Amino acid sequence: MNRLAVLPTLLLVMTLAGLGGVFAFADRLLNFARTPLPLTAPVCFDIERGTALSGVVRELQGELGLSASEATRLRWLARLSGTAARLRAGEYQVEPGQTPAGLVRMLAEGKVVLHRITFVPGMTLEQARDVLAQHPAVRQEGFALRPAALMAALGQPGKPAEGAFLPETYAFPRGTSDIELLRMAHESLRRELDALWAGRDPELPLHSPEEALILASIIEKETGKAEERPLIAGVFVNRLRKGMRLQTDPTVIYGLGPAFDGNLRRRDLAADTPWNTYTRAGLPPTPIALPSREALHAALHPAPTRALYFVADGTGGHSFSETLDAHNRAVQRLISGGRE
Image (cartoon, rainbow, N blue to C red):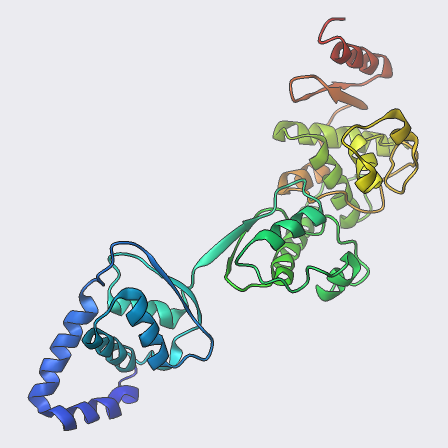
């Protein structure tokens, strides 16, 4: 507490009440400050920006069920502690057992309620933006922005928006904008990718962090098994080294966009788009999803393997093969339900 700041207030109290009255007042105020508030359940309330101390106390009196005398003491407590001018706007939650002193300190320190939002690995940007749009604590500011305009708003003009955000859980106060949350996710992605790129395995056939991001997004969509990610990365790295096409279904599905009805057909594999890795060599032009940290790590630290092929094994995993003949046998086992 800044004693000089509260001196005029103390002098005023002493003048009005006399020295004895000051001691009695201070005793009552101290007891009030230390006594838990009469709450049996958590109480949430909002303080609007620019609200004066008197308005804050009125809000708290109603929300917390304080008497008029308790509200007066709360006002004095905020003034005498030097925090009256530092009360911060926001959404707060008071728990049972909280004392008035703790409440004033919480308001002065701006310990607002933090909400959470989760972007799931493998989501597309469109799906992530739908999650933002459905969250009641998120302020919609950039929902209508096209991907190019969104990246410009994030200070990344000309960069692909797909895959540019790290999928994880983010904590934020109510009223945070969708653009600000995407900025947080983008900055998290850049930090993670830059660190992994700096420590990447040598002699990878990847020429930039952006290419690593593209490969990681494909790995993310190919398997949900953490232990398989490095092996799948190894297969794709082997193919890139040999100049073989990646021939991965998730890129085809991404390229089809809304035309994909959930059933990938042979004609779809032949339908050329910039993302069709059956018809085009090398990596697609952009990521196809939001890759996890684990997928990014796998792309830059692939397992040492000679495998060039993999196919689902019917149990949620994959069978890996070094030759086309072995791969065809694995495909046949899948078709026949495990019987060759």
